[in-house]
Image 1 (cartoon, rainbow, N blue to C red):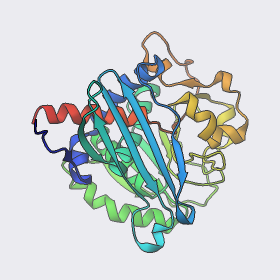
Image 2: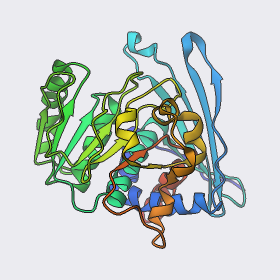
Image 3: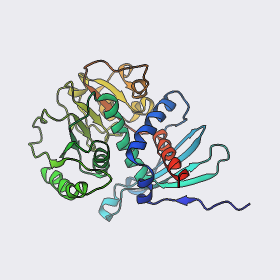
Image 4: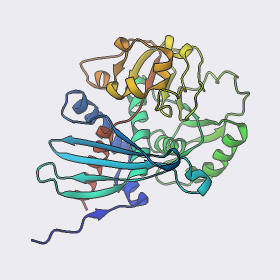
Length: 320
């Protein structure tokens, strides 16, 4: 019997299949499935490539779907003027093992990561945020800007870079684009042009750190009403959120198992892992976070979140 040709979607088509609002809902479900062991998502396999590059193999299975993300991360590509991440996410029938479709790996990673941050905002922020601060000016900052534009279009977004000119360039590049983007807008996008150690304006409700820094880029005293999300630090050697902030906050992670090996902010601060909770414990309506206590939400990612993205894509394709 002749099988249909497997559909392969490029970056643009992949993005269209997994809109942020649907991704947030899918991640909510997947976080509960993962916590209740309805999704199997083993620790990622890391294999070395030339010049310090790595190949990441990340499978996940559930009763309704199986996926495998295979991506290569090559920082040296910056000098070649090539993207640093290449790869694919393959979705399979969980009964027959047949390949259903293939998505663009960097696009899935970027969008599901930003959507997990937005799930954190929905879960931990008691009110609709009015002002966001993005610390970082790379691809993940753009993904988060797009997610905010789709889900919080009335918000003001500030951007802080490793140097003022980086933040200014980011805002110049994407400000006009966001205002004319039918897929998502923000009320205002502007650089935060302050001295490196100057306090963050008190009006900012949500801080999202999106760097690969090895020193804290945010270490202000924890304060009620401001949610702090750490995204970029994904190895024990990386730190974005400082111990000063962590010590006064309730601590949450997306993946409790992975965070113990990858959340450099928490590892270097020597946090007591017994008090660190997974987001699923709060997404579950039977639990709640400590009232009025500031929150730090740290994400490290796992293949279960890629499976959630493939669930969204499968549903979109079924309606085509």
